[in-house]
Image (cartoon, rainbow, N blue to C red; front, side, top):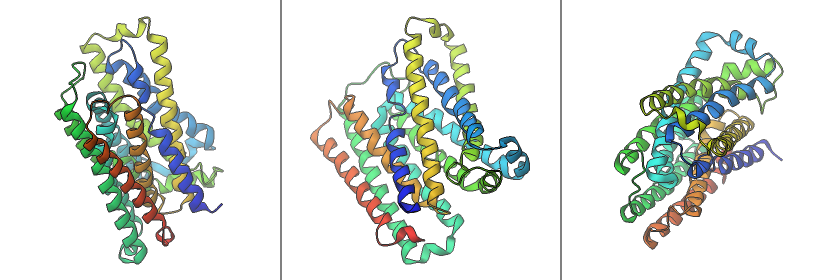
Length: 339
């Protein structure tokens, strides 16, 4: 199996797993948003990334020390910015559901997340036939993501408003657009972490696992906004006591499941992007996002988010998924992957 095929397969599997990350949150009982998010963020964004990095990167501390502040600080800073988008994503999902929130967020993210690494890493290639194919594929995938977001908007217009939502649907959608811009920072952190990755390999890490050193640093920095925001809400809303109620064990297990999905998908994407070479972030990012949006629409449909929707909304969603499939085929057909 070639490195490109292996990388693509890893990224698609990672996207399928990652799409289920926030699904368990629908089944949490008697906890406020901040209770669930604190447990999830602590495990997924702080403990797991550092643990995976420590287990897979020999002499991890020396890797960071030798990379120096000039290499590690930008990775952590981009990770922190991504962490702000994560808070917005969590609130948006609770407000408008998986399908709508991820549709808009991925739509906002895909253009920047795929084009910035392409322009940064090999700007001269953008004018070649292969570079043009990448741009065309990104445009097709983006059209599909926008179609899915449109379907979600059509669905929202006819559904009964859930009074338990943490905010209005309009506010949730606005958060989605901002989060979509900020979420690209995690992919930029991966592209910016070249020196950390190089040192990880030098100290004995495999090529596929070397990116874990970057993920460990970026994602753990991204945990800070979630932890601070949740602590503020728990104190202001006096919801610390909810951790001790009868549903605490069940809810905690659900949050562990969310964290497991997230870190598995994140590590899988990192391995896939590494296998695809220097342009892994540019080519792999839109494929990963497409997998996420397809999966999130599936889980949203399965859990009844589309129950009250019209056939027009449903068919718009199907059209969006079809466009994404065409975009992925365009991206990997005719030699675009050989840039």
